[in-house]
Length: 95
Image (cartoon, rainbow, N blue to C red):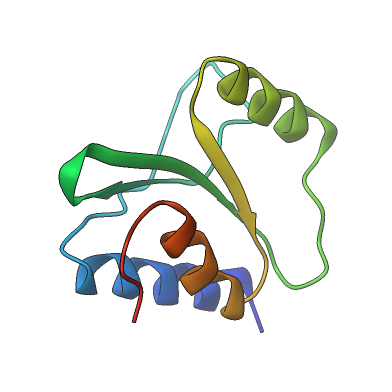
């Protein structure tokens, strides 16, 4: 299973919940997560997507910690099965 497949499943699940999951691009600020997940009622999280078994690079781990220190939720998803769990954790009703 490729990262792109997991990403497509995440986008579909978020859309099904009435949210959006735009690609996050931050020129000049490397290591930021791949997607923002924006759900109804102002729920937001950053999502890093990986192929199964792949780990975040050290810079990505530092960015994750930096964002979490600012109070944001940051998740790394490397399987389709994790999507519903992450969305429930965000306070959504994943189906």
